[in-house]
Image (cartoon, rainbow, N blue to C red; front, side, top):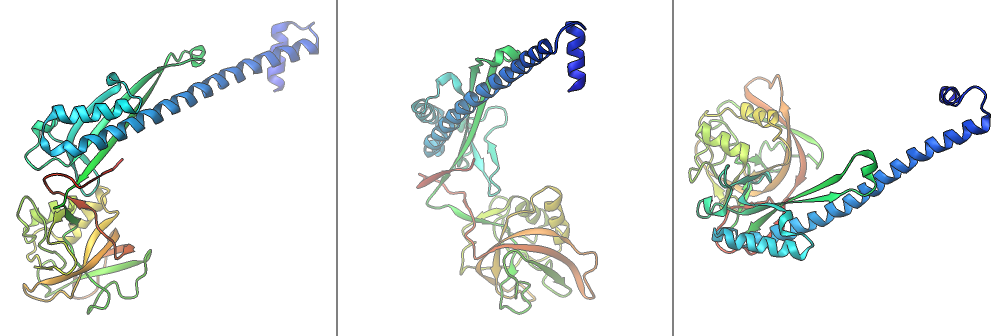
Length: 337
């Protein structure tokens, strides 16, 4: 502060009084406070506008998603624009309305990368709408700082749920607590547990023949298992009480695929079936429930007679996995973001 006073004194001249210095300092600080206040005012106003744009995008996406499988872009856009307008958005403020799919990881993928219209979706593929809005608001006081306009974008993704939607899980079973050799015995939510692949077990022990690429649910295929683990699969077979076959064979080593999930940041919130005891051979296992897990990593040493070992965190037990897929007329819709 003393350097500021000294510089102001120098600017005003050595003969000026202390009163003049204080007056100059007050004027200087007042100008700064006014500039900050002006910016805060405009930012607050911009926040209100962004909130309006978000409400409009949410309403438009939720309205349009009920039409998503009719694959008629005119109807989809009409529903989206009408509801957006009812929530104080101008037609010119609707940036885009896209048809596409939301996978179990809640990632939206438009139908057709270059022209994401509903007409470009394959029959029965689309289950979501992404709507983007943008309001350009002229600044009021921030113009003093050279800011003439504030942009307030918003984005919303709505997903349709169909009567024939399917449970979406990773095709990897974990023996339920109470089953012989279950890694979940004595494990509470929030704690870690370790799974081991034993020599002599049926192929890559743990794989379940649910989901897969297209209609191929054979997890003995390394490619099928890798794709299904990375994306999660939606299958009517993934229900409590269902009997499913084990995926055998060494295609797609389990530890490598889990490490691939970790490397791609997909190792959190993995929904997995709890099953009865895995046995040698191709006998089926029964789904007893579902758990939510995080994959932590593999161990450097697994012990004698073990082919691989992996550490997980039990996030939640006895959960209901998300739903996906399905065709026809939706019976519900909800916002993803």
